Amino acid sequence: QVHLVESGGGLVQPGGSLRLSCAASGSIFSTTVMGWYRQAPGKQRELVATITRAGRTMFADSVKGRFTISRDNAKNTVYLQMNSLKPEDTAIYYCNLKMIAIDYWGQGTQVTVSS
Image 1 (tube, rainbow, N blue to C red):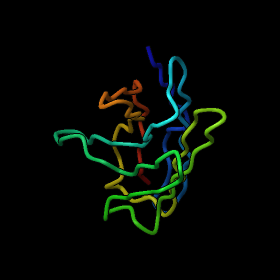
Image 2: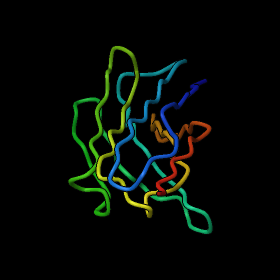
Image 3: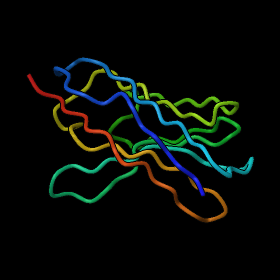
């Protein structure tokens, strides 16, 4: 079983920054992809960014140049640094871990961008 715990969400003004963290625990094999998805009210969950164990990253076009993703393999932790936040970034952000074709999800953390 795999357990993901997110932290770092909150309320921030437009143009501000937040850093999300997600720690994974349990039976985790070496080959995993970790990442972040988000779901805004009335919308489907969408990919934000992913990172492989080797450090290869992928970003949604809407966040390129503003968000960075990183991970600490020794701690099974993934981070999402969000800069230049916009009101349209408001959503619940979910941590995701893919392992052997199985998706594991965190409980979600709310990010609200508003003045």
